[in-house]
Length: 336
Ligand code: GLU
Image (cartoon, rainbow, N blue to C red; front, side, top):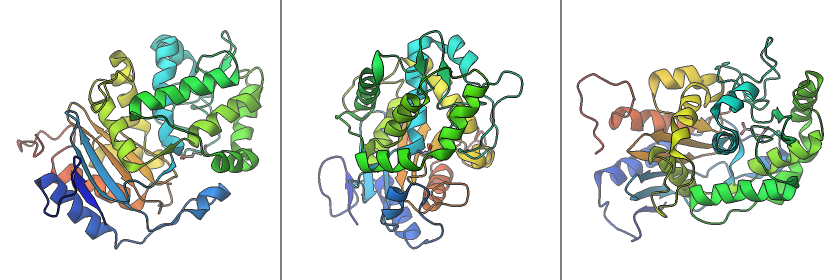
């Protein structure tokens, strides 16, 4: 196991926070419950033992333990950032006409649209991450991303990830093609939206951009930096670049808070109390506004698709550092 604070390799934990991360890592690496996602064949090849935790503070300090340099595909965590780009491209009022913000408590793959409006319920479920924008002839929360043709849209999306992460990112072609060739359920959702007139053209182009978005490669530190950027009014705390307009942060964090953890979102909000998003890669991001971003990666998933170790680590961090947003018990937040 490797652990680090800032740049130097340190023999002795230089901070209580790194000591907490080391302790949680040693404790939960022994937990071997859950299974890796298998429905995308390429994802099934991941090493189930991988495990890393990283915290990045809004003033740019980095605390990390475990396999934090291991790359993996971002999967559903990308929906948070695609939603932010859609908001920047169209504004809140318009995006709300295309994708709701109602928690469903459904699994990410639920094939379900709002009966009345025919909108996907929220941007964190798959249909919500893939709806359509007729007037501008481009597609999704993903299709709401502006651009002339698939290449420009992909490049705008990759550039958005670059701003959040602070380095160029790339799409894992094997995972992308693996998901594209087996993504019949997502294809079925797209056809359901076509049936309701929510998508009026080239479904395959919208799906390709969505599958590419899910196949962007990140590591655990990237997750924490992205989360810290959201915690820091949209400014990447390492590069100081504005990654997303600060006016949309509250909208992004609100849907993360209510809808970010699949059909565990309610219990998560109740117990852990931090806006978060997970993906079937085994990653979780959690955002403590004005304080820090947390990234955890461990590919063993529970039945709802959340990382088993990731949920445990976030639960403990929330308790130990008093991070629950509504914790008014008089205890001072232990993280300053
Ligand atoms: N690419 C995956 C899908 O849409 C993402 C799943 C997830 O991480 O929730 O099926």
